[in-house]
Image (tube, rainbow, N blue to C red):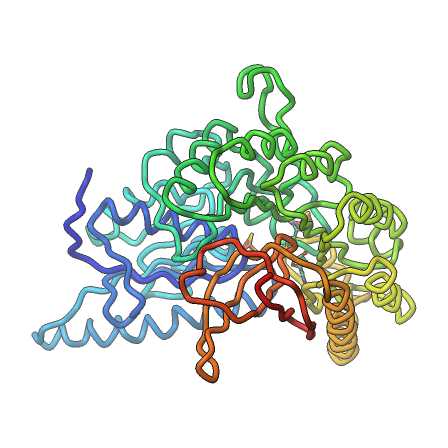
Length: 465
Ligand code: SAH
Ligand code: SF4
Ligand code: F3S
């Protein structure tokens, strides 16, 4: 199987969330065993892969247009072949969440596609590549998840991580929540967790390889462990995110641990306690609220009220000095009234949210809310609300950043820039805030204490303490 004599080039374009980025790292790792070397130049690739996201219509449209361009290149090469001229053999693959959703339809719609593979078929890639190299057109989109149900599969290949200080480590995948707007349960399947031993092993390797941060990934990372057996999988202890963090915290070395994304009501007191106990786990929580209005939350099938969200936020703020709490919000959910939308704006203020991702509601096939067409908000109102939401978010970020002026934060230095002959370093605090300060290049990859001297909307400035 081993073949490190690279004789082919692969280019992957990755859209969507960290889960897709992590899948891409696994895809590249697997392909490297079969002679495929990564290239950043799509024009020189033998194999082109688009790893797609389906969360909004805009994301899906981006995927369709990416393969359109590649299809033209492939047709040009095919023409050369017919004319007896030298030509390049190009293969095109389409994977990720849109693939899982559209399946065979993609092969019909895009005649130049060689391969469609879903989120559950990532680990079959070696075999799928063999088949398309033999001239087959293949669609592999299993409904039943294989990923994470068989640890051996995942352990077989190396992971080709993106060049950064952070290593993504998926610990669970899928979602059982079925929020009425969301496609993820249909594209990632039911929730299942990876075994602690496999995760700890992967984390140890990443730290050994020099990564300074690991980020545990899951659509509902705080519901980790529910599909595992304490007796069989975890020496009898409860399989929870809190206990996993405690185990990871014991790995030797100076590094940080993060986890995303948390579902509000799955944040237990024990999880908060574990974050507090474990010095490597960052004081940072990403807890999407989606709407500030309890009635809208009900229609979204979120299992908490505005007040319950507030209780969780307060517990966290009381436990940590420099914590940041970030969120996601949707503007213009079907039936959302002006007053209900204003509750979202006021929630950002009331809970002092440090940053929020925002989006206008986009109907997704198969989801419940997409059928409520008579309650759809017109586009103009929707985007006008989104603009107001973004303005509120800017205000909130600035307010949040100003809180940190005068404090000393530990920064992991990520990069540098030369400005007017000075080296300006950029890094992140535990709470994920970006900080700029003067320093020296050799500090990239190191932890330093920085005193915050001023704040702007998207970052802080400071000086080495
Ligand atoms: N698991 C996470 C979110 C995953 S999807 C959670 O439960 O919060 C990432 C974000 O995309 C969501 O938080 C939501 O704000 C947004 N989103 C999901 N479906 C959407 C849709 N149909 N239209 C607009 N935004 C959507
Ligand atoms: Fe989507 Fe809701 Fe699951 Fe998050 S919890 S992935 S928003 S269905
Ligand atoms: Fe998009 Fe799939 Fe992630 S829909 S947000 S890539 S889980």
